[in-house]
Image (cartoon, rainbow over all chains, first blue to last red; front, top):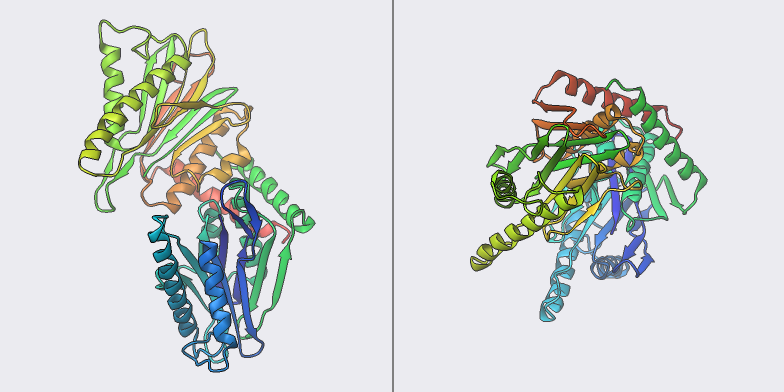
Length: 242
Length: 242
């Protein structure tokens, strides 16, 4: 399983993913699910992935292949695309092509159809910071003022805190805190979502990564935050009129 | 969809269900999902249901039919059964029989197999207060010291608060508060879970209902609690070290 969450704030973008993948409970591995493409000062694009690893790895490889292709065009490479919308379209098309191709192989073996989805965020010089949710079929939706966040994977446990706290005017620092608490609630309830975590922030109109961290199991700051939140919740509960 | 939650506490039982059922988003109805069987001073049994209404209504009707049957035996009527374990077995067997019978009809039409599950709580004189989760197949598990609550239906949104607050020594009053907040988080995130709510409490070794309420939409106490909790969460979040 997977949990990834991305925020689109006035201040910029905050993106967080876990790294646990599993095929059954006894085949657990760590795979990066966040991929960052950056040309500092020109553009920064972050992709987070959920679903079939065979699909998502192939999509990322194909996107990288087109970036490295000396004949790449704005229609083929996300690093040359003229807008974030074009970036989302290239990613959606690639995801759709790979899903269909792998799906055909699976159908021949009567295996279950694999699926994957992605959150894509970024900004390029001259354009707005944007956040997209790309479905397996290649179509996508965009975050708006009313819905300034997207989640993929095991999203339900971590949603109540996002719903109550995240607004467009949430700061990057508060956004960082809320996605970590949302992840914490998810990891407590679903064993197949796990550390380490990848956390990325991008400030609006900077066109570069502001911070990028990998948070390892036992990280003292994260553990302290998790404990403080549990205490705060319990205190709030006990102080509340019933 | 449905959300029901039951707590087994040292102090007794707390059970809460919503009442919304839907077949698609434009066919929404209110159906009771909590059924209480009581012989005050001897026994009290509460059943909450999730899943296919065609199954759960038939199960409740069959249980009632056996209760009313002048030839009922401890093996057939939950009001005569000698232990709560026997009660769970009668309910499980009935649920399994009905599921198979309706499933066969559906299979003939190549329709999707319907499922239902139930939470059963209660106590009879001479026995312990017990709480069971009964699966569609008729088998069941029992709440323990380590896992003093069960949920059925749309359980994920409302789980983090339960995990952090519910212990065996939680009082009935606090239990009432936590199941309502768990329901509140669920209703905020899933439109197909909705008011009114049915709330039941049973004090240990009383063998009767302690309180039974239907909480209607716009109930001022529930709304105040919901608002206070959102405020408390936001305050706790802002006061927390990041």
